Each structure stands twice: as structure tokens, then as C-alpha cells.
Length: 301
Length: 143
Image (cartoon, rainbow over all chains, first blue to last red; front, side, top):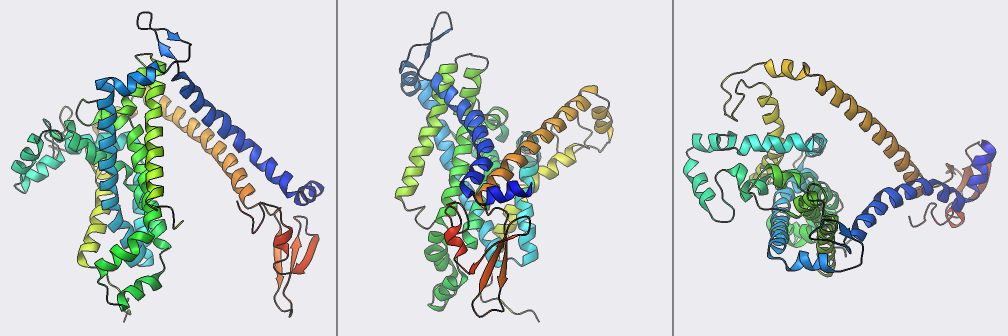
């Protein structure tokens, strides 16, 4: 045993290779393998009459995704939801992350970290159904708003075209709230990690030079925290693009990309279309990452 | 008296942070509350009454226990596998051959000795020189 450890200690490359082979095999076969198997299906098409997959390389399935009106609507609907959710998550997460890193005492900071992570340890499905209870027609939120006399305001919001609906739990507004709730920890944690790295001396210098707190936040803290914001927004953006459970439990009947993938590979049995649809979020994420890179979001890494 | 920090959060910053934290825990409380409600067809709030009936109803079902058993075993296997693969990856990242560093701080020229896991001294070199010898993924490496 000692002979073996000494042998390996003198050959660091062999040692590292031995350590990395099992995880790389797992990652390569289980993760990448299944992903590429699915993606490879997207260059096939389905025979309209027999509903059997035609194993001939073609771009027909992709053409169907980007030209058919209903499919384009699904992509645009998912994309606008992802953008709105990302912006809202950033707006809510910034004050929380900034407070817990910058101002809170050691005890309060620990409380905040546990408080942010605690909802992540709960069942995803349980939280979605909890929101159904909150947003339902006679649910908690409408009761609360009625009690404080804002019931009419809720009705007015629900009458708005596009985001409204018969109740919050069957409107895009309700779906948006649930998405924001679900992905908030994924925004707060990278943001807090980035804010921890902002040196306090820079903030002191900014204050000494006469900047108001809001000014310091906008011109010093925010640019330095941009990598964290970028990392968090990749989470919220991609998670919204791929999710199929939230849109099927809460919200209006319109389809989302994740639901389409789920339905096409399941009940509809159209694996090529499902595969072509799952390429869409990948492409959108790549565009998003290159835009973020061009905006300098990763310069401070 | 506790000394004042050079910057104090504004009331708005404090409120926004705590409101956000409250938002993240609202559904958790809701689920707990609704486990005790007497309403069984509607999502009525506030609950018309409180009862323990649903716990008895849930535990009386055989399929719940079967599902819990399956969930626990899948979770156990997944955790074991993740620990194994994760530890291997992390070990490769900080691969040092498990060596312990001993610094002779009381010497004028700081010398570090590297000990193999079996306690034999592998090398005593001036501090810093070890890093030139460690492999591409060792200390001072890039991974």
C-alpha cells in the first residue's frame, strides 16, 4: 500500500489520470452520450402517415421548428418569459445579496445563507403546488389583497391582455411569479460570491471621494459584481428555457419549449421534433453567453 | 458600545433584503398550513378548520410507503455515486500525492519538507522550490 502511494506520488500525471478516468467516463457516457444521442435524432424526420422515424439526414425538422407559426410562437413565448424572469430575479437578488455580504453581522449572514439555500432543499414539485394554493382564485394572495382592500387592483391586473387571465394561477403573471421564486437562489448565491470579492477599500474610497451610497453601488459595486450577475443570469435564463413542470401546473395554456420537448418525445412519439426543439435553448444560451462576453461580463473573472 | 460601521444600510436596503428572504419562505409555510386544513375540495383561505386527518389518511395508504422506500434507495445510490465521482475529481484538482508540508520557520532560510503518506521525507528544499517540481496539476498548477 505504501509502495503504491509512493509510486503514484512520484508520477503525478499518472495519479491524476487514474483519479479522473471514472468521473470522465461517467460524464462522457451518461451525460454527453445521452445528450448527443438525442441531438443526433434532430437531423432525422418523421413520416407524416406512418408516424415512423425516417433515418435519413435532413434539415426538415429544424425547418419545421423555425418556420411553423405555432412553433415560433412557443420559442418567442419561452424566450420573453426567460428574459423577464432573469431581470426580475436580478432585481430581487441584488438587494438580498448586497445586504447579506456587505451589511449583515456574521450571525445574520449565516441566517441569510441558510435561508437562501433552505428552499432549494425542498421538493421542487411541492413548491410549485404550494404556489398553486397561493395564487388560486380563492387562494391566499387574493384573500390577502381583498383584506387590505386591493382586490379591485388584482382584478384590473388580471384583465390586462397578455399577462392576465381568469385567476393568477392560470395567467402568465402567475407563472412568472413562480419562475422568479424557483430560480431566485440560483441568482443570489453567485451574486453573493461575486460581491464578497469586491474589496471594501474601494467602497471606502468611493465614499471618501463624496459618492452617495447609491452612486457607489451603481459605479463601483455593480460593475465589479457583473461576473456574478452573468453567472446567475445564465442559471435563471437556461432553467426557464428548459422547464416544463411550472408551465404545466401554473399559468395560461400556451406551450413552452420544455413542455413541447416533453410532449413530443412522450405521448406524441416525435423524437426528431423533440430533439430539434431541445437544440433551441442550447442555441439561445450560446447567443446569450456571447452577448454577455461582448458586454464584458466575464472581464473581471 | 458596539462601534458603528463606516457604512450603514439604509432602511430601504434592509427592508428589501428581509422582504426577499420572506418571499422565499412563504410557500414552505403554506404547505405546512395546508397539511392541517379541513377543506378538502377547495383552496379556501383562511382554512375553515384544522385537523390531523390528512396525516392518518396519508400513512394508511400502502403506496406511500412503497414510494418512500424507492425514493430513499434511489437517493442513497445517487448520493454514494456523487460522493465517489466528486471526491475523485476534487482529489485530482488538488493532487499533491497526499503530501504534508512541514515548514521549518525557525531556520534563517525557510526550508519545507515534503513527506510521503508513509511518513518518509521525500524532499527538503527552500520554500517555493517544491512548486517547480510538482506536476502540471500540483500546487501552483493550473487546474
